[in-house]
Image (cartoon, rainbow, N blue to C red; front, side):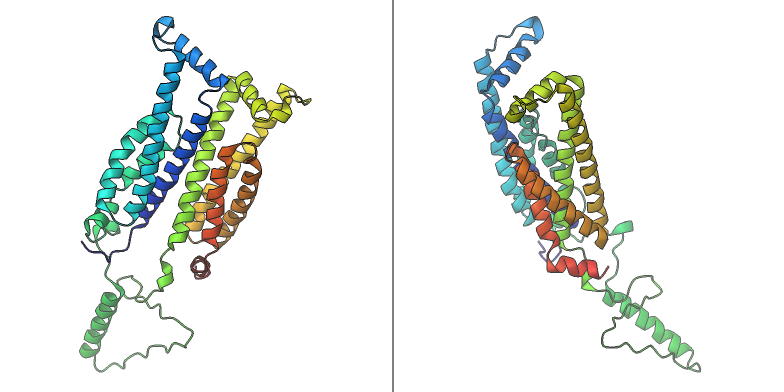
Length: 347
């Protein structure tokens, strides 16, 4: 198997999405297990069993709790394995890709029960590892180019252009040869042949891996937060008593305060709308950044810094807030790399 072919960007994105999504699953399962024997969970299980077929169930509340605990542990074990296998996949391990495909099935199924929203993301990213160009990369085959044809290398284009110029010169000896412009020491050759390909291009035209990682981190983290906010707002609309009761329990300081349900509902709608717009804007900036827009990279960095600070404050009340905070900090670290700044300066 050839090891000289560079890893495709789609493969890098899929591997990072697997590792990040599996990490989210572990955090979600940990939060579920910590609340599994709470009074709220017991009441929910009692209502669930009472509303089942026949109005009653042969399974007791304690049996249901133990079943959910086993499912949660299985989901966490699959997620931990997915993190390790995702790293091995990025090292071009075909065995790890097969093992990850096997692990993704129970991870997806148990994630539906354990309410791990990132489990479907891991399964979807695993599917991309079997599609082109990842399929060719793992097999050691030449990567397919757009249009189904491989573009000739810059040296081949230069040779084709030189041969064509030589033929024209030999066939029309009476015409004086055109003088090529002399380039200065600080100038770069960017002549274009008749084929339409650039004869010589800079090595900085290739997108740095750190930019791809920042793109994936932003999309995954913002998408998961977006889904969670939409779910919370849907619960607020359908069952406002349940939502506001959970909010008061999480924010114990509000329980004895002069806050009315109407005020908390309006504040929740406002905060939810701002967070949805923030997530959508971050995703848009990430795509523009990937297209080599320096101003978008600066805007995304500002958004990531603000997000990291807010998540640190929110983590004092909500433990899950630490995950998007880590993703935001990692995004800032990627965008501050020297090769990333050089890549944007050349755009």
